[in-house]
Image (cartoon, rainbow, N blue to C red; front, side, top):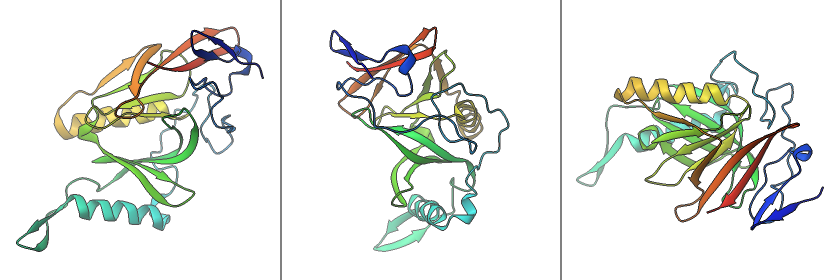
Length: 226
């Protein structure tokens, strides 16, 4: 595979677009991203439209249920006069979405994670160690960014923290769940930005730009530092 570099930007030839181009002069982590028969993440065309929500049978996965139950108790408890007093539960009552996605690190590498969305928050879980890696309240999400092309990239923008870039064959379903849940919980219309070029904060101090170019062989995706 041949990489070309111009003005500090690294690009893959269009034919080789099985992984996004990153700005550190290297390919992203070597992962097969073509969609398989189980609907795992792909960089190809998003084709699935039969929405199920929970694609992982969360109630039958004890480690996921344990994470959700622990977070629900923590989020709905408060410390008063040295005692832990449990309040009535608000949020995290229902799993609206559960599936495997590709999560992008700040260096542009990809790793499979589990994305859970409840009526209160989203969770990123590392399935290799059964551990919660990140939790973002839905109230902290300001907007969603996605391209105008047929790809699976989605940036979840959370200004008070840092943003989240993922790839999923069920991108459209994820967006719909975010928009509908935000509207029902707060009467707030979540902004959805469709553009072939947008920025996101890979960390609190690192801004990156991702852009999408149409080629004869499909969509070429490039990620660069700002």
